[in-house]
Length: 411
RNA sequence: GCGACCGUAGCUCAGUUGGUUAGAGCGCCGGUUUGUGGUACCGGAGGUCGGGGAUUCGAGCUCCCUCGGUCGCCCCA
Image (cartoon, rainbow, N blue to C red; front, side):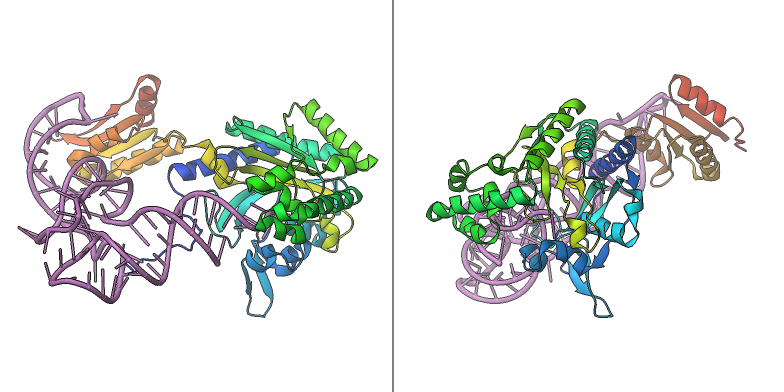
């Protein structure tokens, strides 16, 4: 690899082979399942005005200042490659007046961009599948979204070892009361907290709850739980979500320390977590964001959604069985190449996946065809001065191949 | 932004306390053999050992810098 070799940008990936197959399997499964739940497909721009993503987060956070791919276009406007789907969807909801469709169930997938240091299951350009219910304030929306996620993971065959962790952040009143109590509690233990968590205490105290530092975790264990601060309404909402999940047959565990970093989140927060992906164990996550669309200048529009990293799901799916051609058409004598091309097209039009083996040493082509694992082989060769077509296939496929190629004239 | 580990052929990797012209397997290309066949054998292409500097008579190997990768921390919409 010379120094002049073109290289991909850090954190981007060229997905190919079994990994690409696994990736496609995830997307195809998502598309199938979202239709079962009657989620409608939407396509959004890959970039937006920076404000679309920055405003809901607060201008000063690390996320905005350091982790977005932002740039100026030729008109001097600040644009940003989408780091998530939700904000763009919310913007589209507002600009297109989609409240007329509320409650609106939307599904989409595609590339997202975050300027981060790559590590296992984290890239700068990565891909997510995404589902949202916009304009739905009822806990049933949360339940349906979770049921869909649950079914998706099961249909991907990766539900083993994956746990749905569920929590509520309450309504704003609950949340503020809880935050206040947490700050008070952690202030009392400030000296024992890690350096990172002391910073969090000032910047984003809820985040202390998911600190990875063992010393912090000991302190967190005795922190006041959200349940002590839930209003009657918030408690009732969460109970309805739990009851709905039970009715839907979705298993979960309560994780009272599961939080979200941003203020527009309300009520339900959830993550499907695996222990098989190292530090990046969240495989699908989301929650209710009743405050977001207002923040972007729309009407009050309670909404809930989730997203999942396709790469991470693909890693869990593992390598699918290699796919083999139905038919390998082998040209053992180049004189018969046109006939072989004709045959290959015939077969493809009939829905048989067909590959032409017509390059390299003519003598080795048949062996390569056999080695490729193709289900059947049609070989074109000249023997004793006569053009011939030979088949290697079993039973009904052999009959089908003979039948399909009957009209082919070899001379 | 911080830390640890790793960069040798297209791929996976050997390479001794620093010592001649840097190797293997797989893959690829060609040939022979086989001739209803996944065989065996022979040959070939392909490396400034990530890049630069230093030490040394001599560096793939030691040291420094740099670039890249992996994993973790931070952050996580």
